[in-house]
Image (cartoon, rainbow, N blue to C red):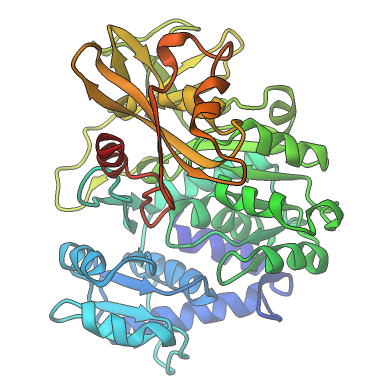
Length: 483
């Protein structure tokens, strides 16, 4: 079954059920289906064919979801663009992907025209499609439907190609893990240009017949207000958003009782944030994955979110996970190694590159282990590993202590070259009230082995991050080296 056919079947089964709520207006499933059919017809009259790319630039808007399913109907591909990127960054992606159309939010039309490659037409993403003959539904499960570029933490972004089968498999994984039903109401506030915001709960909710409450972008006040007014049963957050909500003056009294759980991922979720949500009676179901994995590769159930906080869960309904050593040999429970993934939810390859071989294992570059109970635990990124005097130091382990140090608003740890030890760990922190570098260093006494202690603390106004909020490792190392 194609992605379009799956939504069509759902809409025909419950045409009057609410599908999308945005800025005070609600669209039912029949209305959503009509919008998708109109968009597909409009795209077809503009010459969009199977395999063509259609880019979208702008904050969250129903038009982006309409475009995704319209592209699926035609066998075309949606190219979601991060509107936070600078023009040269957008220009690189567009030149690489060569879309035929670029649909942009009204406030971003000028920039869209500036960065659009030759032969790419720019249109208002929010405009109604003119009447046109219905376009035949030719898209299949094997057709690529999403071209999503990685955040480029260590180099140029790469376009991951996800076919309709991968999106459907990911939706099945999410539906099982979050126990999604048509009775649910999902609050989407993370950006739809990222597979997390798009595919962890939003597209699965629509395919399950649930209602999606869509916010243009994250704002703590708007998020808490939506929880009060819309009474969502599920939402998806990242650590930075969780931190902003917990720090909000209204956190303690906010009406969060409708939430039976939240999903959380994108980066390692600090235990104090998990505990803050658990204290409000909200399980935090951690999700592990990447752009290339659709993104769900490991996920916690609600029960395990409470029983094993900090775990990144188990393999999903569709998907396999293993931990291997440096030679690619599977490791037994308890032994740390690289996490590798396989399953129908994974990308078929990168744009302008050979496809991944069939049945291949996707190497995540992450270190972790599986415990005796079958749960997986994240340790750190393989490329982040610090080797000091022959000892392995995982920055994530050091960062968990660093976050609790007095006067540290946020921080990250990386290696710095050292003549004696090869490398030593250095903490790069954003200082807060009461910060004292010496006190931060002393805070590690008795909490970690001595060789894991940072040798220095470097302060910055803000950590260097990508547009998706991930710490840029090379920039962090440059800061640490300058010290």
